Image 1 (cartoon, rainbow, N blue to C red):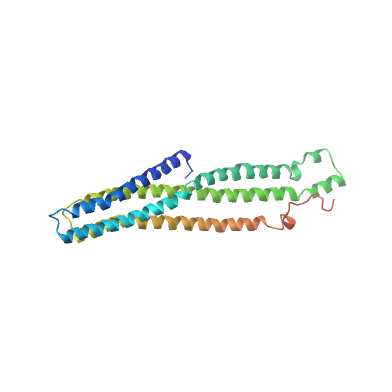
Image 2: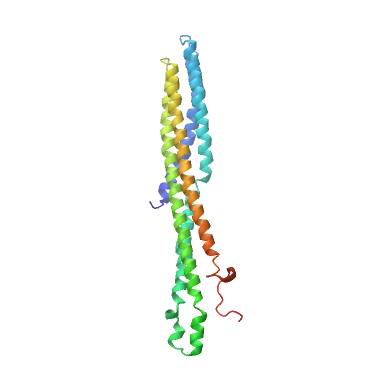
Length: 246
């Protein structure tokens, strides 16, 4: 799935608006439960169940709010990774590939008009140049691929958060309505708490999946760094010199 900036912006807007809406709903839970429990015709055991359920709903709601706000700190990451993907693929890989292609022996323009021992020495001297340039191109392609995967995963993660948040708001609205009902029981209280706690598991699952993918990409980046330090292509960690000692 290619990264779509417009769609992602819409997703972030939904998250921002949804967090505000959820915050408002969480703040309504306590007053609604207290109002219902304080009716003269509500038995004490029903009132106790209402208040217990409300406190649990608020607890889970605040956890979800806190976690969403924490995760929103990284919401811009997919955008920056998409930009860097383009840079590595187009600018760095493209430039390196161009250098590699124009410095191979069969592409050197001077050899079309120059022959002899000097020409041969010149050809031998520049042999390492296209290899080094091609290595940069290969490395840049790997970096771009890793960034693209992270971009897609990050965008999908925030889309899933938006879906979870939308569902949680609906659940919270239902919980508030239930807490306003005098037809209540401890079983009903447990059901409400169970419904509002489900999203906690969804968020943890989404975060775990994203962390696993990013961890795998981090290992890949470490391998790429090792390739960049290859002394065969880059003697002593430097660009190969055409005429050592010159």
